[in-house]
Length: 176
Image 1 (spheres, helix red, strand yellow):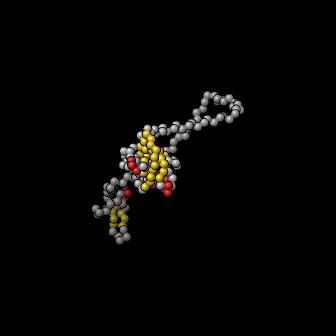
Image 2 (cartoon, helix red, strand yellow):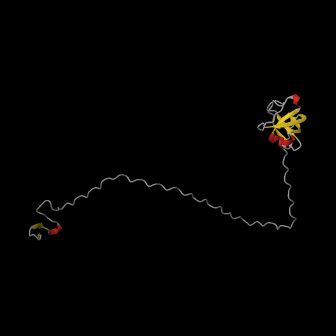
């Protein structure tokens, strides 16, 4: 038998028998379930940044087992080994100068140049009482009648002949 129910106001809501609610008004729930709302599409999720790969450690080498252990013969006491002599360095080939002249050298402020009567760029060596200097001739040097063989820059003169106060030094000029 249908059971009627009333709300507190006193109006009848309809038959509630059998677990199905029947209503007098269509706005109230019916026997057919309502479909669920479809979710709205959203923007595609941003891909996560890929982590940088960490370097993988190299495997350590493990010794392989041998078939049988090898026994080394007992070391005999010997005298300390004699040290080998260090190899002697090969000497650099000496520059051979074909021509030589002996004479006097004077000095001046020539900016490092050595002025001779030889053509410019001629390889030369000048030796005096203190040592030798090697380089190239700057050419257009002292006249033949002046008595001097070369004009040296002040720094070269000090290295080859000595203090500038001597004024003139005795030298040997070699060229090729």
